[in-house]
Length: 341
Image (cartoon, rainbow, N blue to C red; front, side, top):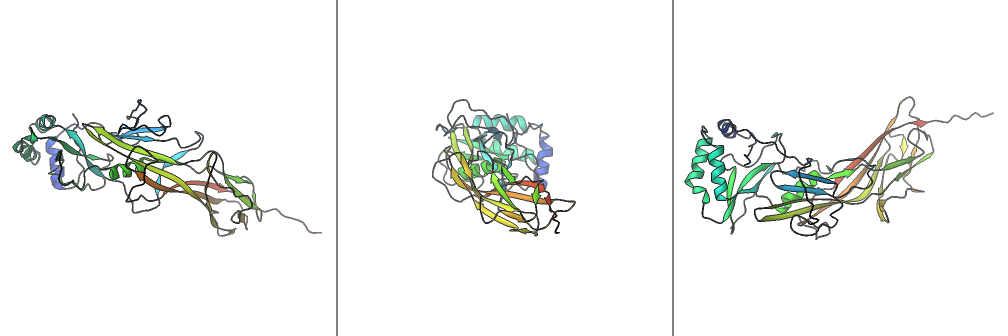
């Protein structure tokens, strides 16, 4: 039986935790390998668009499964997607289906046995409600995205669980929805580092000689599905990240251009850019001397989401911010001296 681990939000919440004195189980985060799916179908019963393409599995909260498609060549490193919107944050907490009335009664009586205030009053309140025994529905419990608890959860400590009837007239604002799942999927997405190759190589660049920038290897869209299928509650959301642009930063103002952007185009083996003879190939105008320049490349990913396990389903609103993946390399620019006679 899982015991909720409330985030420390108010003095009442702290008191509730101390009064419980519970031994809380380990929390599975979005990078764990706890999720499994060997059926070849999505959690909502729909066939996965490519059930063999799962490269990442995990569990968030109590019962949310996460699966990610392959990110391309295994030789390319990956990192967690960075949002282009610095103000965007994934959900801190949400209500998730957990108990039947009978299971909830057992949970309260075992977890709150001998508890002091305010936990004792909380347990008494649930007992007075008779745990909604005989009613059709489920108790939903607050779950947290991670174990840090360094962000305030908007759920009040007197409602760590809520009763959700089958015919719910109005949904609680913190109740799990496909949109919540899409944001959790976004936060779990890993994007490939831009497979950038410089010609000449990064330690062989020369003043006034154009530097060609190209992508090396297969490189395609990435999607992540977060879903739940528990006690009759089924929902899923899939975020789809499509690479749209490659931005180059030479790392110095002594370059022409200092920054430029290439549009990515879909080819036979994924997305690529052909920078041959392009106007924004970088030309360094000054030697890096005894040091280097911090060359950077970043790929912008357009992120959409569907309300199913199908990445090709219709895009939903509200939208998600663009994602970013970056590549950095210190480059050495040499100056070739010529002798006039």
